[in-house]
Every structure is written in C-alpha cells, then in structure tokens.
Length: 388
Image (cartoon, helix red, strand yellow):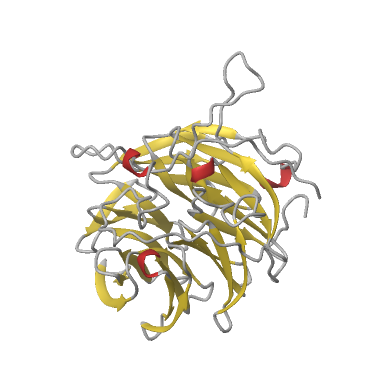
C-alpha cells in the first residue's frame, strides 16, 4: 500500500508550555503534575524493526508531538496510516489547517475513539470504522469543547459517558482543574465537577458507580451518580496512573515521587500496601483477570511486572527511551509500550516478557522517524484497522 506523508508540522507538546522546547531531551517533562523528574538522558536515534507477530486487531497511538495518531495492525506492527486529529480548518482557506492540537490522552469504546486534545481544549470523537486511508489530513471527527488543558479521559463501563480530566493551567490556586462529563449519545458536555487540584488520569470501578481520579493532591474518589467527592486519599507522592481490579476491590496508583505503586482498598479508601518499582512510574496496565500489573517506569527505562496476589515484582523488562504509555491486547497475549523520547513502540509477549517486535511511530523508514512525536497513549482492539 502506498502511503502519503503528511506535511511537516511544528511539534506542540501537550501539557504545560514549558515542555514544548525540551520534551525530547528531558526525562518525562510531558506532565501536568509536579513529579520530580530524574536526570536528563540522551535519546539515541535508532531504527526499529517495524515488524512483529501478534493477534488480529488494531492499535491506536496518540502522538501529541505531531498532532496525530497512528493506526497500526497488531498482527504485524504495520503502520496503516497516520491521521491528523483536532486540527481545524483555516477560515477562508479550505486547503490549510490550524495545527494547534496535541492529543495526549486516548480512549476507545466499540469503534469510537476519543482523544483529549490539550492544545485546543477539546475532545475529538472519531469512528475508527469510518476512517479512510486516503483521507489522512482531515478524517471525519466531532470536536467537543471542554475545560482547560484536557490531558486524559476515560469511558464509563457502559459506554454512556466520557469523563475528561481538564488539568487547567499550572498557575497555582485557585485551581482551574475540573472533570467534564460528556454524553456519548449526543457528544455534548452534560456536567462539570470542579476540583481543588489538577486531575490527571481517570479509572472507573467495574460497575461504573465510582470514578477514581489522580490529582496533585491525591486520589479523588467520586460517586458517578451524584457527582460528589466521597474521599480524597493523600500521601501518594504526586500520583499519575490509576487502575482498578476486575472485582472492584483494589485500586492501584503510581506514586511518581517515591517510585512505588500504592495499593488501596476500595472498601476503606486506605492504602493497604506499597510495591517498589522503578523511577517515575507513569501508566499502568492490568490484565483482564487482575492477576498481573504492568507499570511503565519512564526514568528507569523499564516496565515492572507485578503479581497482584503477592504484591511482588516478578520481572523487570528493559525498554530504553522513557517508556510511559502501556496497553494490553484484548486477549492479553501482548504488552505494547510507548517510549516518550525514543518515539518507538515495543511489543512484548506476556507469557515470558520477551520482545517480539518494535517499530518507530510515524513514518518509520528512518531512525528518527518518531522523534518528538511522543506516544503518550495506546489503546488496542481486536478489530483490525481500516486498510489492513
């Protein structure tokens, strides 16, 4: 398949303005929080193999540094297309677009993709089944205005709502952080919930009755029916990622300051244990049976593999390039890991943690193809992408 390469665009890093010029040289500066970053590391350009083997399906990878997302065939790691997202047309010039987006967060429900577009304060809604490979520049999308600097989002288990973490500018108090609640039926914001700190990531209990939101002040526990905060769990060291066990009894949060995963009882909203992982743990991925937890440690260039029954790290996977984003294939057979500074996605066999493939995001024909594109979110589905 011949692919048309999109025009070069200025890299607009998501998050606060201070990261735009240094995102590829500083360790995990792409952040809304106040986690302490480790020493700067050189990001050596390298050409990934651009091949792998895996189950049928698609991976959609958010690339805020290039205002786009990649659609990848999970069976062989083949890039099907890189699509623009969230870029509005220049008034009066149908051939030009404002490249002002920077979609940090991505979620999927069914065939519908949702992108948290930090650059223009919107959520982009795209039907992945309706994508056209030839129309990479302006795929059909709905843009929903939300709050200031949306950085992450999550879909309720029943698919009826999308909750958006509007981080707000890093301007001190009072915080402009809020949660925007979108109706998936009509793509409109139906309510907002103001928070006293910056929301970062969101996860729901299996029933959807409770939302867990990491913030600079700790973990907010929210009743989704009443939109009320029922608890704020502090002392979590600038938490970032959050995941909930399939039975809803346990919540896992990455403690970016102390290099831990904090284990929290959903019944008591108290920390019941801690698990030592690598430096600056970021995103989490939990197996469908809840037995294995994967933690991306950006400043350690590693992924920690945790047996949740024992609360012990059973393995550490080396992955150079500031790994921050993680996702599991629906069958759980593979773990996909995005390197923030390398621009490389690595694919691991979860049965033995072995590397089965790598590829440069973007148009991966050169060793620096993914430089500055910053894969900050990965979602995977069992339905192959259009054009595969």
